[in-house]
Length: 295
Image 1 (cartoon, helix red, strand yellow):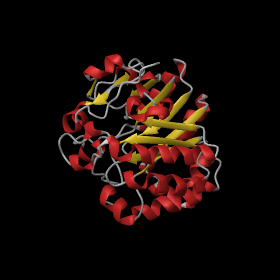
Image 2 (tube, rainbow, N blue to C red):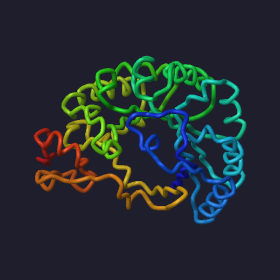
Image 3 (tube, rainbow, N blue to C red):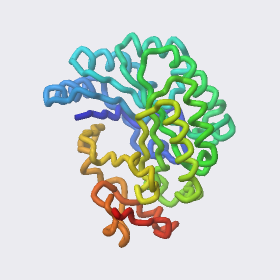
């Protein structure tokens, strides 16, 4: 059982594919409301908590909330971040001193040109690299979420090789969340066939380096072939998401418009698979999908 609290949609970036950027209501959750949520769910048996947003690190009370969660008894306290503020060594130290256990961060591509275009922040790539250097000397557990889009799919192996220099032990490959595009910037979407071999070669690199926590999200197992075991359906996790307006288990997630094609019923991974996003199917069809059938 894991709890994720969205502290608000405010962010220090304006990523071109992110729903936080387009959110009209950016009211933040108060410190007291966040504390009440932490206490309530701890009593209900939750022992893992992740603070999300928006960007949770821009909150002045983030250190206090981490400390409060640890005092309640949460065993693993995580922050999901773009790492910008962690480019300051003092900020990383404050997170550690507060009792933070782990960090999950996103990687959008290579180089300042691409990063600036995606995030809307000049020199944002340099913030990423500075933060990784600071974190390398910390005791925090790190998960890298490599976002696969037209800006990154050719460089996936290079991104993996770069990140391996910074003692990261968890690598998650996220195909860009098309439900957030809603018809805008559809050119950001590469077809699966364009980049799956790049993911395969990246997984080989990770295996050779002893990495065991590897996950692929939003890319159906039938596309992955021999690498289908790395497919991860987050809907099968027991994660409760809470924000200012709602609270729901990710198993009941409704904001991702997923469908299954006629071929899915013949696949032996049908029950495991969450399906494919409807807008991906509308753009590329189902020619790439080949049901996995046990011999």
